[in-house]
Length: 284
Image 1 (tube, rainbow, N blue to C red):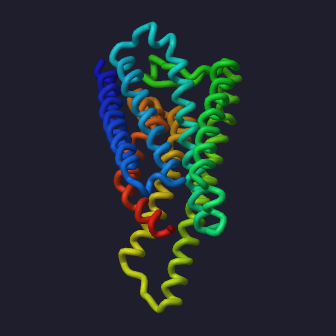
Image 2 (cartoon, rainbow, N blue to C red):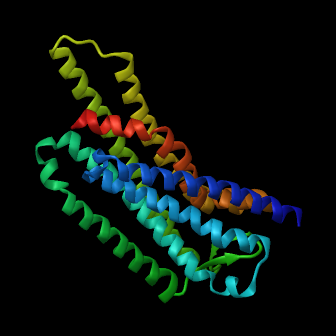
Image 3 (tube, rainbow, N blue to C red):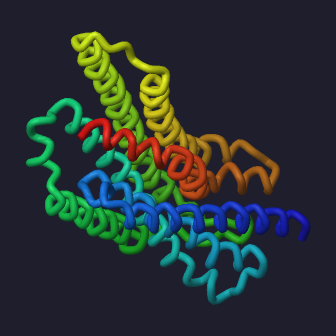
């Protein structure tokens, strides 16, 4: 009973903060005219994903941790499929943000043509539809259901040999590849943007200020932290959690893939939010 309450308390605190912080980020972004751009559309989409993941665990998983109602457990695989859909959308949105920044820095003359508001909305909608179909086929039609596991107090894949092998490739390998690609793209963009900025300042005989150096450093930190948060969620679920024996620790480590959406809302989207705006203004 004590362990169950500890797990429930952790879930409640993390997801409440995640839900509120990401809702505030989305509301603030909608009120800022600079966030009506292509970059702003993708950023708001990311905040929505973080909000939805936090909300799923707050309104469905948290009550089940308090009392595992049979009906809710039975139909939890639908919630699990939706959670995985949001997770895929989030990862693809991270990658799309990285590509958006990359094109802004490496292809500035083509950026406006490649990332119009209309084309960005199309890409956003394609990501949602493709992710929903992908998860519906894998986790419902094929039968590798992602449902609430009473023993671990969280969502877990069906423990069969086929599902273990399938999810290793469809989830771990697929998403980890996108995470690494996103991180590399962001770092290349940061270094290129910094190099361009220094070249312009040197040509004009202007010395880079500490504030400008800090802005570049913050962008690198943001890119690294975002990539690390998603990567750590993947690694801990598949590689670390199975090695642990403490039930509460297994829950915490095994749920990082979802909790990182809440943490990202608190740490990245709030702490670096205004840095994103300054970065956007710096580029354009």
